[in-house]
Image (tube, rainbow, N blue to C red):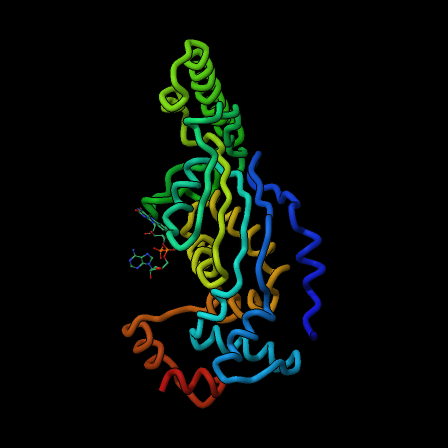
Length: 268
Ligand SMILES: Cc1cc2nc3c(=O)[nH]c(=O)nc-3n(C[C@H](O)[C@H](O)[C@H](O)COP(=O)(O)OP(=O)(O)OC[C@H]3O[C@@H](n4cnc5c(N)ncnc54)[C@H](O)[C@@H]3O)c2cc1C
């Protein structure tokens, strides 16, 4: 078999990759890799294994032409520790299977996300959903960080008091903030993982979920390197233009002939 990355993927199984201050991503298991994408695509044409070069170009061809179902044949299971506010964004991706720790059953641990000083920034003036890229001055950021920390400490102290009073865990946990860490198993196929990564690696996605997406990308590269390469080429770093944008691009190009052939063809 021309593919030789299985060893690399197996070496990272169960390894914790740190994210944020206390979070992690761990690859629990995976099913299939680039070979599976190729084999399942070839079944359409009744053809067997070909050379590595041909297999690589098939994977590129599939993603370029949005023939995505072969990528659904690859499935990855992750164990993830993440703050609840990140989990709330994450759970919007419905095409995955999730099993989360229960705050009704377990005592929640005193584990809160405390943002580092360099990411504590003012509300963005241009983007209502985001923060400015320049953080607060060190002294002010420190004060804000202390306020965040004290709030967590106070909430957890009261949570413990409720538990000591034998209040049901499902009630006591109501007072815990969104910065609390939770954990879940998350299983997704490669096609839907690409969709997650495209949205959550985008600069408009919140910094904290982007940090997780970056780690997922690198772990998945070990499992299916050619598929990730094709994803980066045709999805992640590709751009879509609106009709108006395409029109104005066409109009502003002086010499279409100087463009690479593939680009000129698209602009016809
Ligand atoms: C930067 C950013 C900001 C966001 N801001 C907000 C916000 O302010 N408020 C908010 O509520 N959400 C927000 N979201 C969440 C966003 O609207 C999507 O819910 C989320 O990104 C998941 O995308 P999805 O539905 O395509 O993914 P998935 O749920 O994984 O679905 C993948 C694809 O499957 C198909 N699909 C899945 N389920 C169905 C269904 N039931 N019916 C039809 N088709 C289906 C769709 O084609 C979908 O694109 C934000 C997302 C991003 C990236």
